[in-house]
Length: 111
Image 1 (cartoon, rainbow, N blue to C red):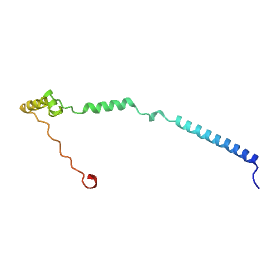
Image 2 (cartoon, rainbow, N blue to C red; image 1 turned 180 degrees about the vertical axis):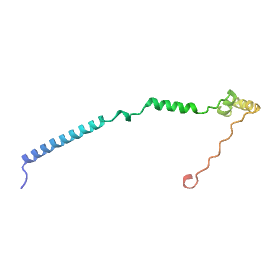
Image 3 (cartoon, rainbow, N blue to C red; image 1 turned 30 degrees about the vertical axis):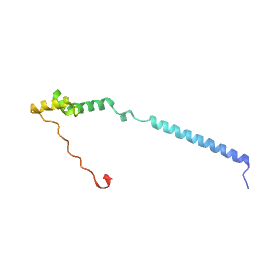
Image 4 (tube, rainbow, N blue to C red; image 1 turned 180 degrees about the horizontal axis):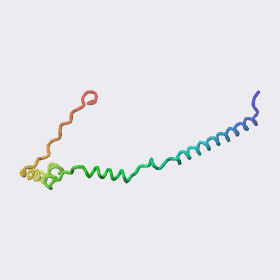
């Protein structure tokens, strides 16, 4: 016994209405769940920014005179930096040294 074309189209239209209603209910439920979020979970941006500013203010900032700054951060190979480093050394200050050597990971990482 084969279904008639009329009964199959009627079944399809009933299923389509049922699916539409189901999606409508699911969509409405999802919307209501999203709207039911309490405001307490929001991030207090002012408090966060103030905490970050306070943490930055506590950091020790190294005070350098212009010669020390030029010697430490100036472009290498220039006469201005060389002269500044000579003046810092003559005044008894420390010259910027080499950083600690970086160890190679070796093994499979070196390939």
